[in-house]
Image (cartoon, rainbow, N blue to C red; front, side, top):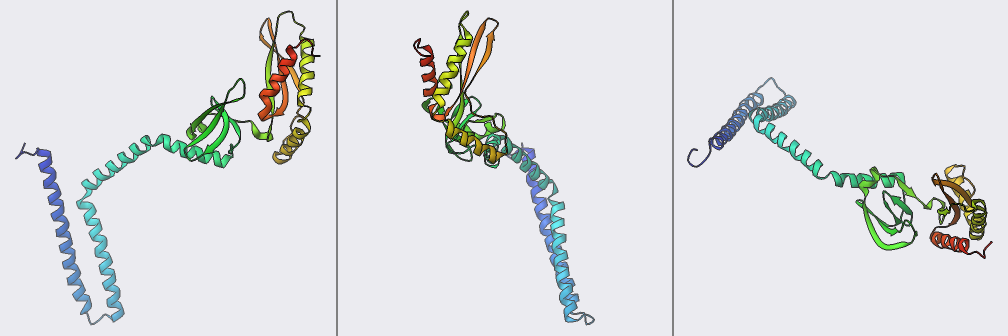
Length: 276
């Protein structure tokens, strides 16, 4: 310690003082050179007025460049420390703002790729619902229950950074219609063929009213995206859950907002022994 200051602080102060004096000395020398050479140029009878002006400008600009270079040499160690500090600050800023940067870039991905718009029903990661708000940092969904497809009343704010790591499933490509599907298990020994025919008939009856409008929507999508789309026909497929457990998968075209009601209507009619 030296008079209450550490040796490093004392040496640092001495270094700054020496660099400051060197800078002022450099400035004084260049001013003296500027004055002396300026006098010689101004009083040289061999130079015309235009040549004197040109030499004066060249002298001034040259001395400015020399002054900047001199300051760079004098303050080289301090400039190096400053650049290192700025680089460390930039790295820390990027690390601290990584999530923010991902959110903003995710918003650009959403807009550039037209992933979804307000009003679309989407699934992002494990979250499913209708888009009600979007901004640079997040997307807000009104949550849908995955089983009943009814709104739970909860709003979910999803960071746009998730768009880089999760697929976006969009239900509303067909406008107001979807191809809804649900599973009906078959008990061991039950006549699955009869159950299949019964479910197929119920699915056809359930979508009879909306089928023409959905056909028009499918045709519009096919023309817009140049896709070959399957016809929205009701379908029942088989699936083995286990070796001795069979399930029927019912596929029924319906309005998006009516999917739960249609599913319930088909299931209730299927469980009613009086129905055909």
